[in-house]
Amino acid sequence: MSTPPEPEPDVIVGERRHLANLAYRMLGSLTEAEDAVQEAFTRWYALPGRKRAAVASPGAWLTTVVSRICLDVLGSARVRRERYVGAWLPEPLPDRTEWSAGSAVTADPADQVAVDDSVSMALLVVLESMTPAERVAFVLHDVFRYPFPEIAAIVGRTPAACRRLASSARGRVSADRAPATSAPRQAAVLRDFKEAWRAGDIQTLVTLLDPGATMVADGGGLASAVRRTIEGSLDIAGYLTHIAGLSPDLTLLERTVNGEPGLVAQRDGATVTVAAFRLTEGRITHIWAVRNPEKLRPWTTPAHA
Image 1 (tube, rainbow, N blue to C red):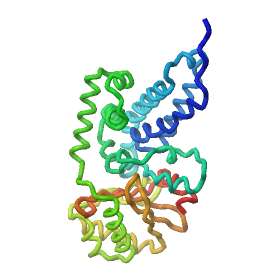
Image 2: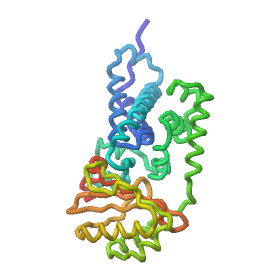
Image 3: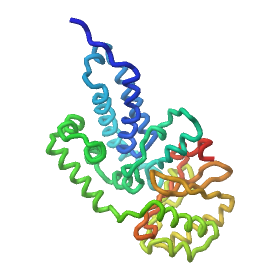
Image 4: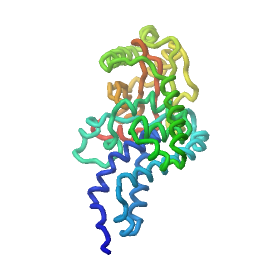
């Protein structure tokens, strides 16, 4: 009996974009997502040729492996993030068109991840509050529309248990959901915010911030960043004007961050901060500022200079 032919290499490589999209949403880290995808490919090519040829759907096989790797990474990440210096935030994702502007071809995972509502910083932050199993079940079912029997085979639980996990995760997302602010409106508010920040205009900053606004910064011990959550419009405005006074050489740029209007701070052409925002009823309610240079690698290409 003849052995079926192995899948063409192009077929396997063609799964990279889907796998990167899956892994980034599960892990909130471009670096860890790329590692998970590379590990899945390594395992695929470690299979004997006859076993690869016997796999009916290489895409489904790779999806299962990446999902299980992500589940393991999420389990160990909880321990690692307890030792992390200060707050841990997801890695900010640049707009694909901006990233691609620097090069026609790139292997960077940032260029593999499609930007949509499921990569917003607000959602990724909520996903961080979930158990690993909740997060994987939610991403597979609610984002990528995998049926529960397939999810059950991936996570090693029953379809009913996976349905409960996804439902619990969905409840967390719904509880955190805020009324949508249109991208043009958000961009206009952030433009005013940027100008007030540059000018050290505390009063205008306070009016643009919700009274109960919060700000979280992630330096990871590799860049200076306030380690506590700053709460309240007045405290945030005071902190920002203090920073502006200490760093008059900063250049503030309006950029797309995880699919939504955001701000990027550069010094001498190098990105030092990427800030994502949430707005409710025209006011800023949350600011997430990523300063850890290890998380800003996709923002350091010539396209962002």
